[in-house]
Length: 297
Image (cartoon, rainbow, N blue to C red; front, side, top):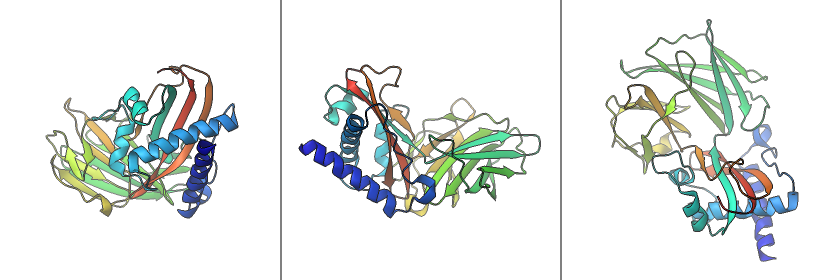
């Protein structure tokens, strides 16, 4: 009974957080999708969400962006699912937690320029947004920036062509919703590297310096160990640098990714798939939680 009440209160709290920060038509209530068993799915999803939120922020409605790295197994400080499950006090419940940007940004390199398509993360709904393109040459230490706007069908265009030594980053912003895409001159996505931002300092080794790119501004190249005033930028930040193999890699702040088994790997009956809005300082992210019945990972 107490758990059910707490679950209900969490759902109300998340709803009012979403409304109070002005989701409008970009998010609304579409980011809640309970499958198979609405009642059981809601209780399981909310229980995990409550545990995750308290684990990250001691009960605060604002989650520190630094702490989101503890929810991904792809970061330089990877989480352990078994350890996370134990820390959250969730027994044998099988679940997966994913931290995602609110917008999905796809870039197609054509002979005439760059075509950008925007949708809401997890959906096919198009999004009209402001766009900023950064063209970075880490070897020549040059950055060029361009702005555009997508149409109501989510499509945008930059009449820009990248040379073989240049890398592109597109950031899109619609209200509080932000997304990004990284790509080479041929249109291939960049690989995630191992440089990361924590406690407002860059960590990791790099020879050419790190470019820190946000929707509203950029700075670089910065050596590892330099401090960054994160409050001066809107999140997420895209960190661009030359990796150990010579190719240009990227990281993000907060770090996006997940921890736990994928649905194919999960043991137990599939119960629920829910996505919550998670406010952080400087922006908001999506927290997707998939839960299954009793079973091991």
